[in-house]
Image 1 (cartoon, rainbow, N blue to C red):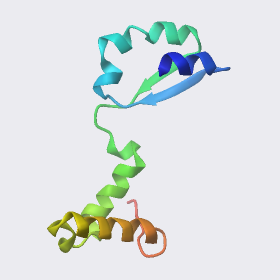
Image 2 (image 1 turned 90 degrees about the vertical axis):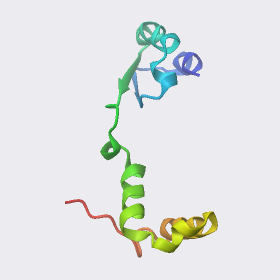
Image 3 (image 1 turned 30 degrees about the horizontal axis):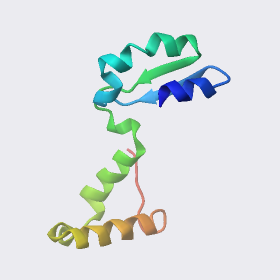
Length: 98
């Protein structure tokens, strides 16, 4: 995919990556210099950085503040609670930082 992507870029481009095994494999890393010559720079997130990923923050609030205990009783219940939160985010549910 990156080989195809780099053929389409028209200016210097930065891609932010997590540390998934595919992004850290020898085969992937062997291409980095080639991609860099074509204008692609890769930026790796720190190994565990949930604060840099908004969905991680949302999940933390869902898990610890908004989802009631009944949600954990079944997959159906969990789906219902998650859908309720997503549907009512910003109306009924709000994240506060610090």
